Structure formats: C-alpha cells, structure tokens
Length: 302
Image 1 (tube, rainbow, N blue to C red):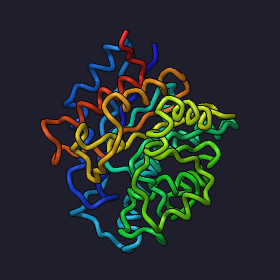
Image 2 (tube, one colour; image 1 turned 90 degrees about the vertical axis):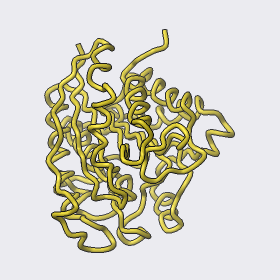
Image 3 (cartoon, one colour; image 1 turned 60 degrees about the vertical axis):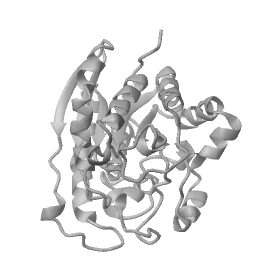
C-alpha cells in the first residue's frame, strides 16, 4: 500500500502578509489526513518543521529578505523530503509561503540525482516566481523559488545539496500564470522554461495544455515534482491567499489539473502552498486545497 508522508513547513518569511504560517494547520483541520486514508492510502504525518519566526529574525538585505533564515529552513526541509523518498514515501508538503519550494524540489532532485536520474517540475501558479535578488521589486523570496530551482539567484538557495540546477529548464513547466513582474520577464524568456498562461488555457483548453505540460515534465525523467500555489485558483473559489489575482482557474479546472496529474502516474512529490487562514472565509481555501490534494492522489468521481 502506498504511503504518503505529510511534511508541514509553516514558513512565512518569504512574503509580507502574515498568517500563511498557519497553512499546514488549516489543511489538517480540513481533514487532510483522514481523507487521504479514505482513498486506501497509508498516512504518516511528520509534523511541522521548526522554522524561525519574524519576531526573532532580521530581514537583512532588502533585495532578498530573510535569505539566511529561509535558506537554512529549506536546507532542513530538503533533507526531510530526501529522507521520505529514501524510505519509499510520497512527500506531501504543506506550506507556508512558496519560498519553501526550493527545499522541496532540491530534496526530490537530490534523491534521483544519486540514482543518475533527472526529475521534471510542474509549477501551477498565478505568478512566475522567476525573480532574483537583482530583479525583484519587493525583495520577497516567495517570488523567486522557481528561478532558484532552475539555477538562478542566491547560491544559498540554488545549491542546497551542492548541485544546480535542481531541474533542467527543458523539463520545467509553469501552468496558469497571469501576473509576471516586468523585471522578471527576461529571466522567464531566457531560461527555456515552458510557460502556459491563462490566455493559453482560455484559447486552447485546459486538457491539451496539461497533456503537453505533463509530457514535457516527464520526458526522459524519473517523473516530476508538483507544486500548487493556491492563487492559481480564482479568488472566488480560493479567497485565503496572500496575493490573489482575478481570472484564475475555476473549481473544475483546478480539479482537472490534479486529476490529469494523477492519471499520468508519475508524480514524485506534491506541495501545496500559500493557504492563509487569517484572510480566508470559513477555511474555504484549505478545504479546497484538501480536495485538490485528493484528486492528485487519485480520487475519482466514479
């Protein structure tokens, strides 16, 4: 029987809006563990990684705030993910802000690098997250982790295990983006990353976009890591996120993304980030996040 290991990373130093550190608790309160068991899967909850809090930290360089603390957290987190994979578990990572993705993807990448294999990456998000300290308008690291995974940015985050990049741009896909900083556009273009914007989804339909995205992430790899920023979903369905952007995926579109990932049978890890119960409505966003996790883990309508 397949075993899912839940790893909470309640880090909120990567962005300015408080409350996202309670995201892992919100998903657990929404019944995540029991509902995964109802799918016939085993669940191991590793609890939450100990992370620094803002009140005991200093932002440091304004171009990459709290870089030292975030890098140290990601280093520990990456080891947790690596350990889970080495023990044959499927890591299900609960954020926290999206800066934690550098640790998640580093851990997955390192596990397969030791076997001489590459991994792919599906990044499902309203934002590109391709800033670097030199381009970021805010200095918030939650806008940088995809760049870090592709080898751009601070060495503290791009080389958590010494090797970089964690994922080849040829196997990395950004799905659902609809807000890109002017200063990061050049990095997006130059990187070789495949990008499907919401306009692409509107014009072509979600199914062909996801078929292509999965094929790219899976090409000549051991499989792919999945990271879901809940702001991919339209704020009408997911109001409890720190950086909402209108025009996102509908309820059913979000489920179709996860269902197609499950159908592919190649997901190596799943990460859900940016759930902020402080600004949510009756835990609506966390409840949806749990439903989407279940779809990614194989729940079907029939």
